[in-house]
Image (tube, rainbow, N blue to C red):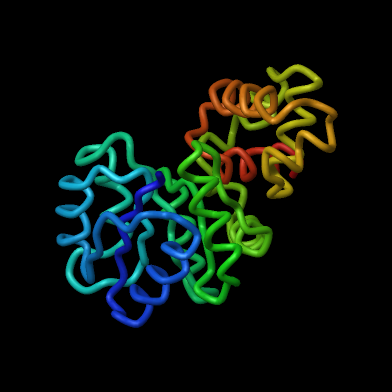
Length: 213
């Protein structure tokens, strides 16, 4: 069973998220209302997913994402964000967040995001992806200068998969587009990320965008 630690400074948000996830059969391993307590809960519980709000008192969500590997290498960060958080979302991407979900999302989308991140995939809401890609200037993307060269290293099929990732498609959606199994798509995505030197799909999407600039 997937286990989640929820970190948000608003008790009503925490309880609402708990209700939605538990109804879907997802276990809540712990909760926290600030970054320090979140890291302590994550280190203690070792959940598959840390659902982290970016704005918390004291140690904020960005610091939690940044320190996640140190306290629980097997835990992946799913950021809980709002439309006003563009700069922080970008910073979370650069620190290796595996997914982003809006606080205004439907319960079904939250469940989908948690399950995707727990399965080792990324959850990229098309809204958040467009927001991040629209925010980032090409010169601010890591390794921007050799983006074209990096993308050129990919085989034709890998470029096709990268283009789909850049659109925010899930592995299942990519599988339908390129006529592969989901397992094969997952292998391709891992290979593409490794060749590009990216740690997550949003970074790959930004690099792909930059290569086309």
